[in-house]
Each structure stands twice: as C-alpha cells, then as structure tokens.
Length: 96
Ligand SMILES: [Zn+2]
Image 1 (cartoon, helix red, strand yellow):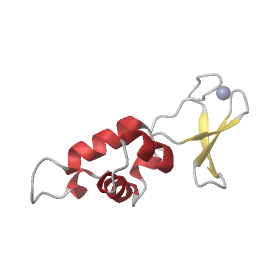
Image 2 (cartoon, helix red, strand yellow):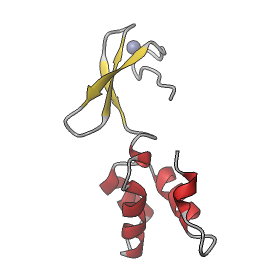
Image 3 (cartoon, helix red, strand yellow):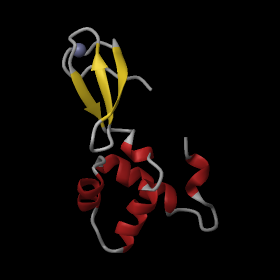
C-alpha cells in the first residue's frame, strides 16, 4: 500500500501503530509529522462490507452509510455494485 505524507507529499512514511479510533497511524520521516489514513483501510476492514449491505437494506443512503462507517462514498458504491449483480455469487472472492 502506497502512502504519501498528507503534509509534504513524500513517500518517506512509516507505520506508527494505531490511533485510539482504530485508524492506521503513520509517521513521516521527512517532515516528522503524524497523520492517519482512513481511505482504503477502513473499506477493507472485516465487517465493513456487511455493514454497508445492512445499512442499504435498512434504507440508509450512500451518504449516510459513508458518514456512519467513516468511509468514502466511492467505497460504499463500489461495494454495493459488487454485491448486487449476480445471484448466487458471493462477493468474498474479491476481498484482498
Ligand atoms: Zn511529510
């Protein structure tokens, strides 16, 4: 996973444990700042896909779902597209 520093844009970034909210935390060795990354990471957390589906079935819109789960609208839409199309085919195969 390629991570760039959100402040200086360098790739001199190392993992630095997790923040209290569960997000991956990173430390930039160039500017020595800390920051969190939620894109991608959250979308692939086990259980998130299921929660997206649950919320959709409960009538939550894409915007609500992305806000509650803390993931991007794109992630929600992509996940829903993967789940709906073919009956009988489970979406777990596309998991990374
Ligand atoms: Zn930096």
